[in-house]
Length: 192
Image (tube, rainbow, N blue to C red; front, side):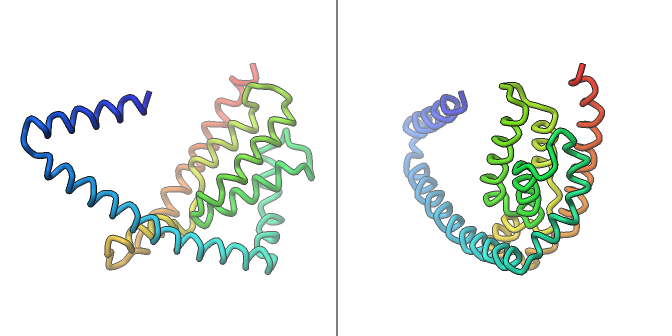
């Protein structure tokens, strides 16, 4: 459906420009937009590569493992249906670690693997309580370093690209706490 909407908007815009005599501006906007997209992708890649490298250093230094040990009691309480030592728990912790550093792209494959493992546990085509909890926490996820947003602000010449860190931590903490609270509130109704 979204593709149809996008196609209709493009066709209507081009036809309108043809009759309005503004095709030159449409062409200029197309070239400017594509140039800007390529530049943005390259600059985002450099920041993502840097933070993925930092994550690898943290992993080899044992920082991620220490974080996982620290977070395991809390995460175990959030996902009581997942048995201790199950691979799903490792993927969940890795996903949360990546999200903490604002690495949504790196977190996605681990999130998909976590969902696959949780589906094996539930042995059902319906989303289990653990899957729903994981989805709401992943969506609202606490972020300490919003890497992607910092990269975009750098790209567009922000004087202080990291000034959003404190507000991001505050906002994502509030959304995560609210998400967990609502999930717990609705979990009982899902069980019945």
